[in-house]
Length: 431
Image 1 (cartoon, rainbow, N blue to C red):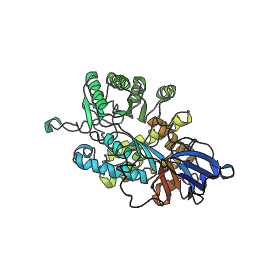
Image 2 (cartoon, rainbow, N blue to C red):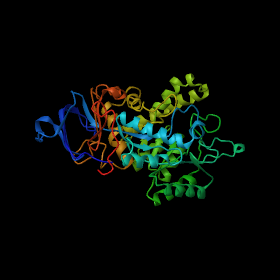
Image 3 (tube, rainbow, N blue to C red):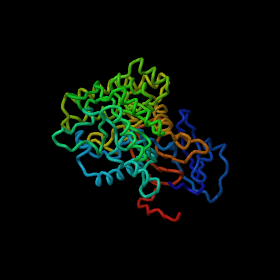
Image 4 (tube, rainbow, N blue to C red):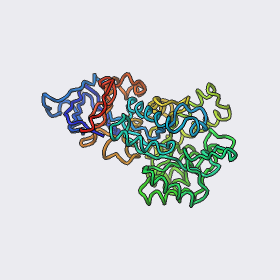
């Protein structure tokens, strides 16, 4: 991905640097050659040349680009689980994923970690973004997911004879687990996504208290993945599933819904981050009836929401790490609504805005393994910057309104927002 070769001065803004420190009132950010050269007060800012570009933040907020830590690029208007693998052909899904990637960037998300995708679409999406063929967040890919036979993601009945190969690897035992990971190694992904537990969406077979993988299968996934320098994460709601994942050596926990004291101790001991993804549960409860979700499913989402809120609070208050992101792409939780997760964690979970911003920037970058490059506004880091016409700390919901974005920048290059070219031309391949 190209970076700017110019000097840019951003002024007249309140700087929220993503570290959790207090905002810098009347701050200045200076970008040189795509990286941050200065961040601090206007009074102490060095002089820049007359030829430098200048951006007036209009008294608003200057902050790091957001990180969507649970991004499903291939999800689009999903109404039921079955839509995830048979609603559209992969050719159309690939096109939809590029639309979702551009939308995420326009929503201020300059980076994202995939939570699984149809076939290996997210790997190629990442390549297209990095080569400036299409706009989108910096991506960490995961490709197809792994689930044991009969688990949450194995819903096509045997008589159909169509399998689940496009969306997930269905495994039976440790050898299948190793085989699936080795296929992902060949696909070139960075993360291996698994399904240790069920979900409220499947109350009759694999509900949110059901285990869908054995510890031995999970351990085989981790050993094989780590041997090839891949990281492992998993959809973990049931308490024993969370503990199995942590004991097996998982690098991240998705959801971590029903976490007891032992699970929390294991999480903290290894400093494993968790991505609760809770707004999906609230959206399912509020809009589920409109989309025909059965009451049993909605009740399950309510239990998941209550348990997830409590677990998320406990993790952060105990010194653990939370990433922000969710299962966007369902009809009731569409792409573009990503920042509702942040508002939810302030208004419903009770976290402070600065805490949530840190989770959505620095911690997200840490989960991606790229916190030395972006996630905070610090000297030497890539200038992935979001400039908002509004006080994000006073009202974090302003991040839900794209019309308030003055600029979305990656490596100092203007990609979206009011100041961006509404009709960008193709990249000059000779540059």
